[in-house]
Length: 172
Ligand SMILES: [Zn+2]
Image 1 (cartoon, helix red, strand yellow):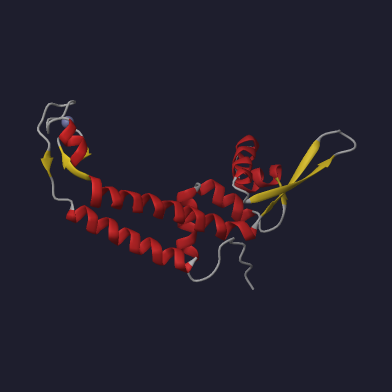
Image 2: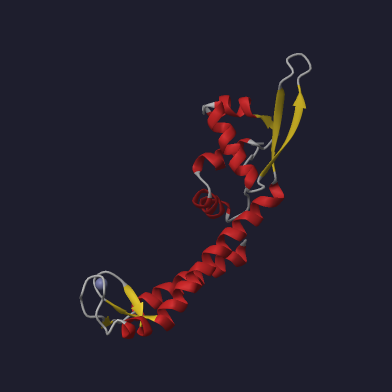
């Protein structure tokens, strides 16, 4: 039997891995995969062929997201500390969900802006009716008149993205 040491399993595992990579980085995920069993940072460095200092930076970043934890022991002979790292299976799914949730909120915000506020543009920016009115419908930056623009296509695209994201969140 081939041992599967991937942290994310199930039929959507590829999708979930891609989201993890998007929210962190490829190297972070390589470490998470490698931590199927607890390991010392110098062993991770050797296995992944990444400098130990970089491994430690990546581990600290993962730790700040609560995705790994460590056990510290003092070497009685040298007096140095060694760190045994473990991944936190329980937090990985939660991290994915939080990341998607934040992304959804940002998209909803953009949709709200497109639907309600932002309706005028020049060649340098988009503004609301009120903003355009306050400037007398002439952009103070580029001097062009503000024109009302059709954002239905943009709104449709955002709604589509939001629907995709919502169904993704349901699956996690
Ligand atoms: Zn302008």
